[in-house]
Figure (cartoon, rainbow, N blue to C red):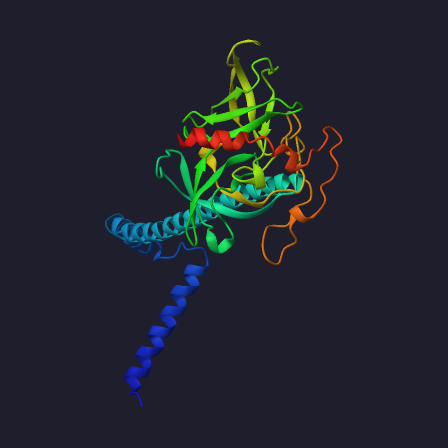
Length: 339
């Protein structure tokens, strides 16, 4: 127990404290208001001084924390952007491949060609030819030498040599390449030769009196057995004619339909149609977007387009392939190319 003196002292202190509290609550104008105000001023000054001294340190810590968060966010956004860019590139490539395959199916379905699809995997000269490409299909896929190679725009070239899984294709524009051609809508024939330029061919008419004009379309005349060139394949469009009727030679400059600089998906014609499709494969002038129902791809388990009767052509009569092959235009062209 506390002593009497201690109890009296505690009582006095409690009474004094209560008195001061009551006086302060009555308006803050008590005897200690001045002391409290002075203490507040002193403590406020100390707080401001401390804030001035320590705020840069505290702010630096907060800045470093924010910087780490921002750096992490930038890294995440950069990774996300790179991923999206990659996906966009893949999507763009897939769309281009799909468009190329759609065009190839259009040509095959209209012309009733059986073909094996392939993709260009390499570009470079081979043997005595400068314009050649390598495709990812070969003997194991049923591809043989001197088969026609096409894409959605028309004739690309012919198979030069094969391996088990790849084939080398000499392009139509190579200087050593030649193919028998026919002016669409007529029976005028000649030899189409490569110039070594990716956007130019030369067409020499066998009949110097034949009529040929700028804008005329050329298709393949066709070889015996469809090799090296199947009949009716679009070649290109006449853009210039040198010489006049009656001259010993008349040569037309032709722009090929197939763009040799952007080859991707191609088709190797493994079996030509039973009948020459004539001009039916050519797109309507100014319209190359007409895509009929897809034709079956060439393969063991697929129905062959060449085994079906082609639809009659309302604009041009169809001549049997055996009759057109009787004139050995491509054989003459091939011998000239070899020389």
